[in-house]
Length: 244
Image: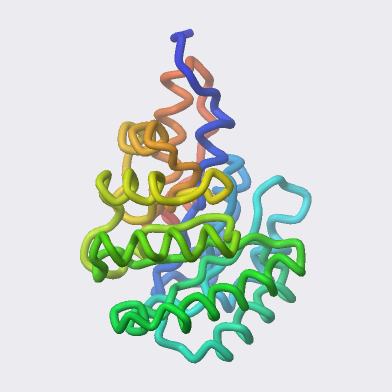
């Protein structure tokens, strides 16, 4: 076995298996949950309407149910985001990925942005769950990203996250370095968009990233097991079809 500085669990528990493509069928979503359970990922980040079903499918595993709030553009009223979050929590989600109001951030209305993030964080934490705040860095200047890191750090969110994966471009190494540098130690960093292979995942891990959103979970974790000298887990053709 190679002398590597990680275990299989170290890598698997970095991955939020992403099932957010709006064209995924119910069968695809079920297969994706099965894939995540087999590979023992951190969570399944699933379309909101399917969170209750996902929670049911993952019962008895260590894989969490996560879903999105204000996705993908962030322009919902705060009251709508709060309703979405409350429903997701009722449906069994224990991690919520919420998009900031990008328009308000670009307008410099940091009081609004901070108030919304605080309300969501307090609701989520009161229910024993965790929250990831999505910046959507493609639209933001470095100065705006730094302000958001400080706001999120002061409020005590669990993760700051680069992007939804739907704006142009995904996580960049430069953004990950910036977000880790300007976030306090108690706030983790999640990379979303562009982490498509194990080498990239290991690179962002070296920058201090603790979670990544991935649609190529089986490919990455099969590679991880091979490098560690572990046997394959194996997936059926149906499960592999969920990786799209």
